[in-house]
Length: 275
Ligand code: DGL
Image 1 (cartoon, helix red, strand yellow):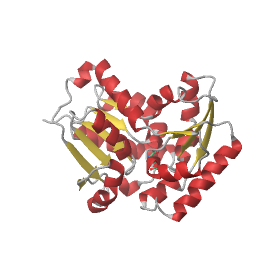
Image 2: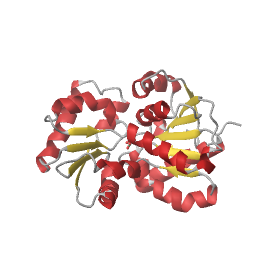
Image 3: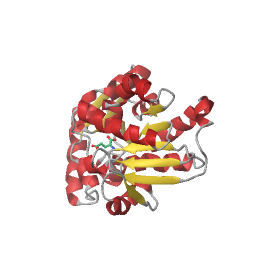
């Protein structure tokens, strides 16, 4: 029986993280699930994000995944703690669910000279204050300036990330962030969708500001986790196979997903709770 690593996102964004994970750890089997039918998660309540994420985690467990990565900042911010502390001990105590916020917070303070970091994310991620709390846990001297960009995920999910409309919102949000905190020298893309906007983000940023995406950070952190946890590593199957699933239309997922994954994607539909 296959025992893959599960990679989860509300939609396509987790594919930017999976791209780095698959490059770094090609030997494992993977299941990717995008909950596209209910994306975006970014402006939804704690309860809703928890309920949707938990349903997806249970699906991963039913498919044989002992380890699930929430490659979604919104789900990591709003659902991970409850899943780890309340749900997992009841559902599957030997299984593990990991997020993307802690591994990112552990290293982002190493990139800034000015000690001012900008964090761009969804309303859910920014509103949870998770990044400020986690970054200050590891780097108490770093000032964290957060700004929500609620239009970015819808633009990306709808394939509008190369349009002039995207230019307008990218410029507007970067201007707002940098006007409030001109000392920022490092900007963290704290949403796994945002790397699709990287060229526009660079276009509107002054030279000298570093943009940090999460893919390589999360891949490095996962590699370290598997070394530190041989009991998990030994049960994961290593056939180098990946299967993609979406709660929405597989033809759409394949069409748009390849830009995020950086390779062709062929998905299957999965129905969760009647979806
Ligand atoms: N990729 C998700 C994140 O990192 C997008 C959230 C959403 O669905 O709005 O936050």
